[in-house]
Amino acid sequence: MKKWTYAAAAIAIGGVVAAGAAAVSAEDKPMLTIDGETFTTHVKVPDDHPLAPEVISGWEYRTRETQALELDDFQNPAFLAVEQGEELWSAVDGSEGKSCESCHGDAAESMKGVRANMPRWNEAANKPWTLEEHINSCRKDRMGAEPWKWESSEMLGMTAYVGLQSRGMPMTVQTDGPMASWIEKGKELYYTRVGQLDMACANCHVDNYGKYIRADLLSQGNINGFPTYRLKWQGVGSLHRRFKGCMDQVRAKPYKRGSDEFVALEAYLASRGAGLSVETPAVRN
Amino acid sequence: MKSLRSRYIRSALAAAGIGLFAGIALADEAPKYDVVDGGIPASLTGVAGNPENGKAAMLNRKGGNCLSCHAISALSDQPFHGEVGPTLDGAADRWSEAQLRLIVANSKAVFEDTIMPAFYRTEGLHRVADKFADKTILSAQEVEDVVAYLLTMKE
Image (cartoon, rainbow over all chains, first blue to last red; front, side, top):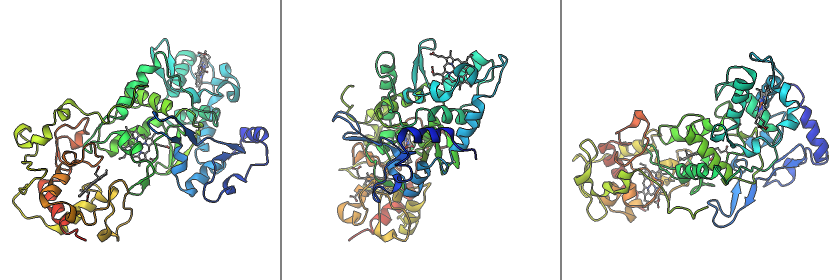
């Protein structure tokens, strides 16, 4: 596997001191520190927030072994996808003979902060666009290339690579203007019971986080780590795949990836989890 | 943001509280039973429940899967007891047979807003996957078997 250029860059910024010392600082409660940069995994929120007193990253609910994989980019299996994304970034494709790089240059600069405020309102489409939709619109309309399938390795690689450029930055989705009604719709879906098991997302992720459901320790179901390497998937998966999986579990008919419903859920969860560090690409079990 | 809505949203059918007046309002194929004083006094099948079969139905991850939420000391040989619900140890000391039958058939009629699935209900559900549409999670006889097992849970 190729060495990480920005791993080095991040160390240069964060200072070499903390590298490697991260996981040992407190035996009981390791911090999420990657390349010397410590991430925000707990955000204090006011009483009227559904997760008061704290929004907590899913990282905190994983085992030490799983956590360790995210602490080290050389062990994080999602970096295979990131590497693919990096290669695609400069690969010419489509009728216009362009690559992402032709227009966007160095992703570390042009894509910094992009993942942190997804989904983002798109005036022309009159709806919020996820990262996937931004990428595919460039492919279709600007490169003359075929759009990538939502769950294709190309799309996962590119969303992981673009997402990584925001790693460590706080999630800050727009919540006012035309986004407000989408967030409201997402919240309604989050509290709607579905499926033969008749459960809403909130039944598990708001009412019962921190408790085991069978062998799984329930988290708040935050979205700051996506796309995420999931041990159960043995691969990287999109946020909408995770949504689908949770709907399948309760024997509900899932919405489609990229559907208005999933985009609304994504917008709601992005706003609910504001302030958590982007962890893309996270590792979960 | 508006203050958090009271709790959960359901389809209009469920909001009408049809489940509580089961015998009268349910559609033809839907499970029928009479609720009396917070319980279902009559057996759903007329065939006595078998506790061994009940235990199997409770353990089955595609069936009752009760351990996903409840710890049960008598089943401590099984891995991974969940923490979402209370332990079922001593359930038969706390609840009558009729009450246990209603808790299993339609938990929502006993515990408002509970996460516990209704194991013998098809009404008022929303977006059920085709494979499970109009099917109950447990059969009537399985409910009887589960109740028979729960009745052994005395402390």
